Amino acid sequence: MGQQMKYIDMHTHVFPAKIADKAVKFLEEYYHHQWSGGGTPEDLLMALDAAGVDKALIFSCATKPEQVTAANDFLHLMQTVHPEKFFAFGTIHPDCRDIDGEISRIRELGLKGLKIHPDFQQVYINEPKMFRIYEAAGELPVTIHMGDKKGDFSSPWRLVEVLDKFPHLTVIAAHFGGYSEWDEVRKHLVGRNVYFDTSSTIWELPAAEARDIALSHGVDKILFGSDYPAQKPAEAIADVLKMGLSDDDNAKIFHLNAERLLNL
Image (cartoon, rainbow, N blue to C red; front, side, top):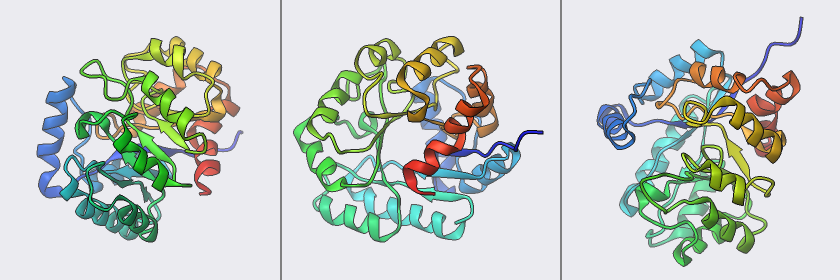
């Protein structure tokens, strides 16, 4: 018998209980997709246990500068209360008054990286005011929501400019590098020094095409992510398995790459 697979979910969102219902309803309307999870930390914990997932990376997105401090405090609290299951990336907004100070505080809180959602923050990932964030990030990995038919804030070609300007920045390009824009991913990002995560991809991108992108890009740079509450982890695991990769490649995607990247 082979060893039981470990799973580290590198893309989940959680909200305080008092706003979770409202947040999930907004996201369902925005993406025209019914979401599987309730969005609270407690619901995510149950979903992780049901799927046999060992740990999950949690995010919250500050859509306004004044939300950043409270969001990072919440993420730190969740990571502290549930250290066996949660680790977090902090949020940052390009219009924060003290970007350097807040990113330093993110480090002090023990958060392991940054998450940026350009579409909700209404910022182009390659515009100059974002450069302060990339410079301050230093060794911290940065997950960026990538691609969307609704706008051009996070188009794959824009990320090329960021990677060229900041070659030492560790970027995780969410949604296989470009939600709904995978032809552009093939053109601009496949083979570059950037990680992709599998979140919110294989329900729209046929598994055979996802497999081709993963193998062309290199499975050493693919990370498992469910995009909870969009999907529960069990559903996302099943999607990854549809690609029909080898056990060794699946182990890299499901946990080994994340462990190496974040020294877990």
